[in-house]
Length: 334
Ligand code: NAI
Image 1 (cartoon, rainbow, N blue to C red):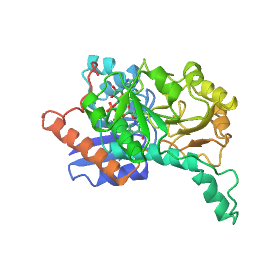
Image 2: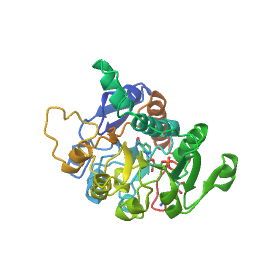
Image 3: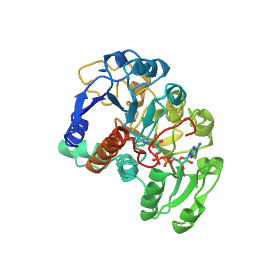
Image 4: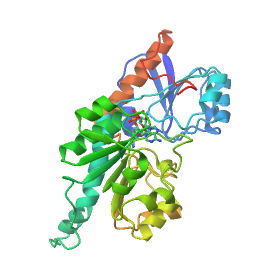
């Protein structure tokens, strides 16, 4: 039996992992993994971590002293892991590159439609028997210009959904897939015209040193007045202070976020009885044209089951010294 220590767990994680087979003994920790909590790991276990765990050099070195050999990330993004240090320590790191790209793509559309058609406000009004429509005017997506930044697994599905609405899609990706673009009537362009001409811009790119704060004041200045921005990728792609400035100036029509640059310790938690210490997040929540969900784009039954299956299959393969599922092992070349 293999002992797996799982960090930052919630009831929905446990439900899917627990049913994955008798060969696993699970220890579910609600707290996150970082350099301080790594020492709590029982010797020789497999570690299962999530998006807001912090696997920096110090954390990885402590895991090594606990004879950990495998770190299984139950997420796609891996910006939270020092892969160079992991390679030096000969710690294997695997992730779940795709569980349900539909879950994330669909959530980005759900956010956009809710914000644009003001469903969140209408819902509250109607529950209070306020049936007036003042202030609820939105716009058709049909024939609007949508700029998609990043056309990997999630971006491609989002594009196809936007095309279903009859939107005109322009995309930017340093590695364009021209064959797919021709099939779906998508036009690849460079980033500047996409910023200047899009009514809606939606982000589906990874966080790297190159994309950190990619959306800052320069980009907001270039965007069309009244444009909507949707981010379901990573919070740090956007410079929050510059975003607040752009919102205060009235430049942006709407902003829908499932991720936030300082989400760690806030998102996934019930803080309803506490004071919110993050002034930028508090400010964002005051804008009527900002809609935020707390990193829930992945939260569908299909995605949770995909995450659990891929994670447990990789652990099984590791124990049998077989190669990992294709595309799941992370090396410093990623
Ligand atoms: P992917 O690796 O299939 O695609 C990413 C695409 O972005 C690639 O085509 C790549 O060439 C492109 N790209 C890289 N740098 C770029 C740049 N500077 N500008 C424009 N495009 C660039 O990744 P996938 O599966 O589509 O996921 C995208 C991101 O979504 C992940 O990196 C992750 O951060 C985020 N995500 C968010 C979730 C949530 O629950 N909110 C869940 C899963 C993923």
